[in-house]
Length: 301
Image 1 (spheres, rainbow, N blue to C red):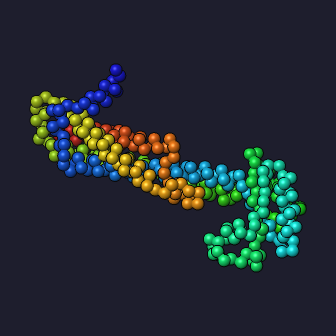
Image 2: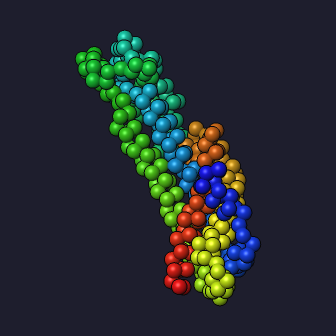
């Protein structure tokens, strides 16, 4: 049996005499349990934010990369001819899987969020839109623009590059913000547990003095504090993760029309990620409590 496994077993088993130096109840216990639970609850949402924005960036990138829009601005008597000419050009362009002109109802639906449902689209000089879907190889935008300029002078190609990059960059920054939030949550947990451990050590000065008189070493005493606070953090974080996961389940299910807000959650194997939070909180508590106990016991010498 390795030394690290032996230490873990000793930590979990504890020592009844040494545990008497650590108050089983009181405000330090409440502070540890509450802070670990609250931070774990928030960590679940930070983790869900990071994973959801990652999925969003991938989806936006895939959807926008496969589609382009051709806009035709021409006099009304030339609109039909230029639209047919543009469709003929697209039909003979390598890398274009399909192309179709949007009808009036589809264009009205695109403008409805800004102008309302009763927009008289037939009476307005609105450009004709053509949806272009690429195949796996994709087409050459520069070459297609040259052909369109020669054969369809009123056509403007938008390959969504200018839209794609800012959206993906924003999603990636949101994902980074989620991971930064997780780091801040862990740091806050460590600070709160350190405060609770210092308070518990200070409140039990007399008990620690008696243990020293009967021959207990500081390592023996510190181990009791580390064990008690580590298990408290583990228990509180477990409850927080359960509540956070339940709250995630109550969010609306993913919906294409709902966009980002209805996609905030875990998918598939991503549900295993919250299980990492309680052990991580226990590790943070172990490190923070051991450092606080050693420092405080040294000052008591």
